[in-house]
Length: 374
Ligand SMILES: *Cc1c(COP(=O)(O)O)cnc(C)c1O
Image 1 (cartoon, rainbow, N blue to C red):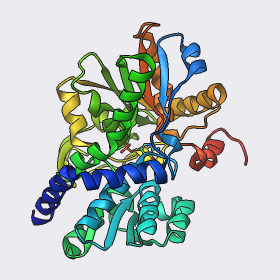
Image 2 (spheres, rainbow, N blue to C red):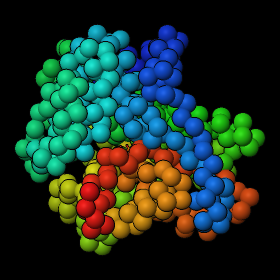
Image 3 (cartoon, rainbow, N blue to C red):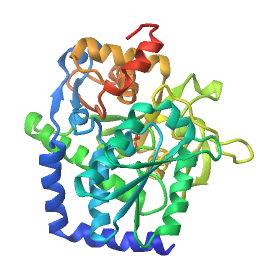
Image 4 (tube, protein in one colour):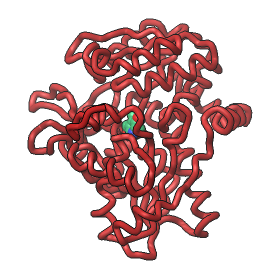
């Protein structure tokens, strides 16, 4: 408890400090490339024949996704707290790469915990992290995947808290992490709200994003939660299908439980053992979901849909062909559900979808699934 109470206290102070906000703004603008554009996806809109669809272009950020928004915030917080050693967990390696990037930028030691199975599966990202100066610790306990890496990172943090800061990669984990990750990612929704106001002079009718742990979605949703006319739509990965048990849809196919310091919906057996998640997209296969999404679902404020591996591959190709944007497989899940959502909306309405990552990292697995060779 003392670690997280200290973190909460320091975070409250940082939040009130205009110096901290100014530092973030400068890095967002000049290092990350914010604000990301709000783009009217004309041909996709036409294709579905429903509302006007805008993409929030967070795939244009430095390192290719939204993760760096959060890493920068947490690393700046670590430096305020005088911590010189940064640790992180990673599954596919995207959060590890973003954390290693920010650590290189500030000359901080970076240790990334990664499941041994994932180290084997994600060699390009392991190489990137090494080039960026990070140390990789393969974790072979459990199934050697993301949840095991997170267990190990929490253990390390408790042991080395005097000089160590733990940068969690999604809006989950013990309080205050779900809140601070949400706040750092809220730049997505705040910008989108302002940009749409400038362009259309109004609020959107719906905002939509894919869900792994839920950080890019909550970052888009948060500034709209009080605007009751705005639908909030999350898309979980249902892998081979919920009924097969091989999926990553914690809200649609999981049950409440406690893991990594938060009570939320989890993929688990009847005995409460955590089940490994499956998704074609390595960034979505977390067996839990941020607790704020569990709340938004239980209160009915947000809707949570699902998308299979197969459908995501179709979404990937559709966006590439119609918009000339190769999306990551994660947002391809949201793209694939656009058709169904558009059917429930009128032509004069507006939907914003977060295009949270670009597809460079996924071309090899897409080629393999399409039976093509690179
Ligand atoms: C990691 C990742 C996700 C999933 O994480 P969230 O916390 O749910 O946002 C989604 N999209 C991309 C591109 C990612 O890298």
